[in-house]
Structure formats: structure tokens, C-alpha cells
Amino acid sequence: MELLILFVIIAFIIVATLKFKMHPVFSLTIAALAAGFSFGLAPDEIMTVMSGGFGKTLSGIGLVIAFGTIIGIFLEKTGGTKVLANTILHAIGMKRSPLALNLAGFVISIPVFCDSGFVILSSLNKTLSDKTKIPKLVFAIALATGLYSAHVFVPPTPGPLAAAAILEADLGMVMLLGPLVAVPVSLTGYQWAKFMGNRLKENHEQVTPEKETGEAVFNGQVSTIKAFLPLLVPVVLIALKSIAEYPTHPLGEGMLFTIMVFIGNPIVALLVGVFLSFPLAQGVDLKTKNTWIVDALKQAGLIVLITGAGGAFGAILRTLDIASILNLDSSSQHGGLVLCFVIAAVLKTSQGSSTVAIITTAAIIAPLLSVFGLISIPEKALAVLAVGAGAMTVSHINDSYFWVVSQFSNMNMESALKGHTLATLFQGLVAISVILLLNLLL
Image (tube, rainbow, N blue to C red):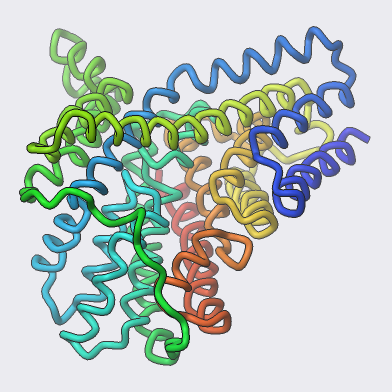
């Protein structure tokens, strides 16, 4: 009966979000309340558990999401994203420009939402196509799949941040292992772009939408170093913290250890990134910069609330012994990772949002990690990545990113399904394969 109730509640989240367009904050909160009553919890206990789950989830991640979003906004508004893209294009060369655009999308999607990144960089597709005579849709698919790869695997993108918080995974380890999965996944998209992009045709009757929200609004000169620093420095600081806290203590246990643990805390590291992003807007008036910050905090606020609601839902599910109900085998780490992937893939395919799929799956799977033996620092990080792999499988007509890619690339429905949707299917399958391989090696 408990299992049936759980399935009904998950179905409610999907239907409410997809069919009735209910905001995930409401659907997850209602699901948590319904689950609490259905599982026999007293009303005051339900509220205590939900409040505790909400607060615990956001205690270490709320400011991280906010700071990461501010970095992304400043890169976007100042044209820093195009500087990053052009730097990578120059380094890899015009002959391999689809690969360069794929990798540029990968880098840019770490701080910038993938749909915003595609809007910003889509103008490069036609420019590069005209210069190289390579079909425009090769560039479009390569860019879209590169952006999508980092979106679900590499913090400070909100999805993996939220999953790490809910599953209590070490963020530094997620940041170290995430690129090991995301880079092959990105290159899978590039290979599909080369294969399928030449076989698709643009719909020339379509008109590319105006890029009102994505274009940089500041025309000042942004140097390459200034553009890369807000991205690289926080990642390095968080990685150094994980290295310092490794059981062998390679940096010792003295003052250096204390400093690395402090400045490598994700909140402090992302705050450093925020201050490094401010020089990008040198010459911009204070009122405009404050407007950018407010816009970023509005974006972050929605993600924070969804993440907190997911944490509340997860806390209710932890009161139920799902493992004994499902009679799961604790000897299969691979089985646990595959289950993370499958649940997230079902949710993603059903309701369209990768972030909602990640947060909901993390809430469902959190009580089961110990059952599958996913208890060490690397194993929990791999569980986060397995959820991310499912949450990119697949992007189709109920996903807003699908429409951004198709409309800004002048793809008709058939071309978008063949070019973009199939690419995300292969990317997801490659991702879970790499994750299972890493689980064998670590």
C-alpha cells in the first residue's frame, strides 16, 4: 500500500506540473503533505519533518545558488560568455569549429543556464557556418549538446547543487567527478552533430526570434583572464578543500589546512567568484549593476524554493522504510546508480524540467543510498551524477530548452527531434555508462 501511495504521489507531481502547469514549489509541497498523512504521520509531526527538511537542504546551498547565479548574470550581461567562446574557438581552430563551439557551450553552461547560453551564442552558428561552409545545424546541435552537458553535471549549476544537498554528497567531489562524466557526454553530442547535422535542413520559413534577453547590454572590453577567473577560481578553491580533507591529509593539518577548508567552503568560494565577476562590468553605472544583481537573485530565488520544497518532500519520504518495502538488494551499487538514472529519466521525459527531475529523484532516492552501499564520498557523488544523467534523458517537446534550440536554429519539429532529442538520448546513455565505469574504478 505504501508503494502504491508513493507511485500515486509521483504521478501527481508529473501531472500537476505538466498538464495543469502547477509550479513545482506547490506540487512538491502538496506531495509532501499528502505523503505525510498517507504514511500515518501526525499533523504536527508532518510540519516538523517538512520544516526540518526544507531548512537542512537550504542551509548550505541557498547562498551558493544565489552567488552562482550572480556570476552567470554578470558574464551574460557584459559579453563575457562570448569572450569565453571566442577564446576556445581561437585555441582549437576554425577547422574544428563545431568542436570548439561544443566545448565553449560546455564551459559557459557551468555558471549560465543552458537556454540563456544558447540564446547568447546562437548568432555564432550562422557566422561560423558562413566562414567554414559547414551546415549551420551542425553548429546548432554541437552548441546545444555542449551546453546541456554541464547543465546537469557540473556545479554551480543549480540541479547538481540541489542533488548534492539532498543526498548529502561532498560538493567538491561532485565538482571533481562531474567533468569526467560531462566531457565525454559533451563530445557524444558533438559526434551526433557531425553525423546528423549534415542530414537535416533548416526551415527557412521560420523567423529566428529576437534575442532580447540574451544579448550583452554592455559593450566594454572584457579580457579573457577577467572572463575565466569567476569560473575557475571557485572551482579550484572547492577542489582544494576536498583534497585537504582527504583522509591522508596531503596538505597537513595545520594553518594551511584550516585556510583551505575555509576558503574552499562553497559559500566562500562562490562569494570570491562574485567579487571576481564585478570587474567585468567596469564602467557600468551602479544602478545598472544593482539591477543585474536583483535579476539574478530573482532567478536564484525560484530555484532555491524548488530545492527547499524537494528537501521537505525528501524528509517525509525518509520517515518511510522504502528499502524494506521494495525488498532491495544491498549488494548492488550498480543497481542503485541505475535506479537513480531510471527514476530521473522517467520524471524528465514525463514533465520536461531537468531541475524538477533532479530534485524529485534525489528526494526519492536519498533514503536508499545506504541500502545500495552508496555511502562513501565518491559513491554519493556518483549517485548525484547518475541522477543528472537521467535528468537529461530526454529533451523533447515538453522541455522549454527543446523549443529554444529549435526556434533559434530554424529547425522544424522533425529536425529538432532527430537532431536534438536523439542527441540527448545518446548523451544520457553514455553518461550512465561512464558513471558505472567510474564506480568500478574508484
